[in-house]
Image: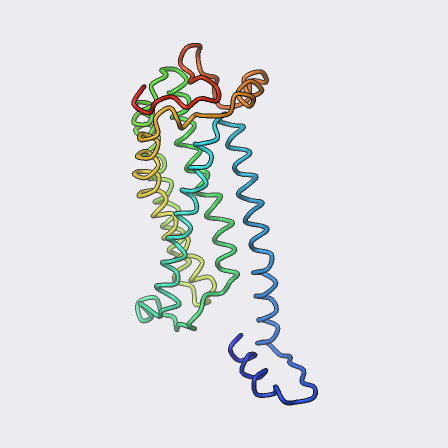
Amino acid sequence: RAAQVDALRVATAGWKRASFGGAPKVAQEVDAALLEGAVPAAVIVVLVTLVVLTLAFGAIVVSIKAVIMNVLSLSASFGALVWIFQDGRFESLLDYQSTGSIDPLVMLVMFAIVFGLSMDYELFLLSRIREDYGETGDARGSVARGLAATGRLITMAGLMLIIVLLGFGSAKILFVKQLGIGMAVAVAIDATIVRGLLVPATMRLLGRRNWWAPAWFMRWWTRWDIGVRELPPGTAPTPGVAAPSSSG
């Protein structure tokens, strides 16, 4: 669509006045408006998520890590979407014809939904790990126990959602097909590779550094008793100082 409009602009470059209309022009303007507002919206979502997670768990490092993991899931799903639909793979199997591009609206809707779903799975896992760490003070062991307690729940929830989303892949409308398959890929990656491997691995490597926060924030957070569970005396790292990752 954009290529059609651009070609017309080139063809009429020497004209004194040329006006464009019709579906291709409208679609181009809609896409431009969506992309223009996408970056501010994404920044707001990420910042609000960071604030909420930091207030919930009393830690900055683990909140930043959670957002990074969500971005990884989204990036992988966007890549799969481009590889399948934009490059025209599996056209016979999926019963579609590639247009050589991905509708920006598909990407925006996927970002909104997948980011929320990924954060949902992250909260399941982090809440259990935080509670165990609060009870034992064992930074590394709490990761293993938290994963053992929530791994089956996250996997089964993801599996059920994938089955539903793959149903959208049978739709005749390309937008719905792209959205369903793209989200199914995102959930599959997030519930297995990201939550089952990357999140526990990074948390185990970081150890007690996961729960680091500035001293002033920890004083405020403890005073107002905000979060999943306050650490028992003697188990929390010194506020504002990251404890060695080997401890725990």
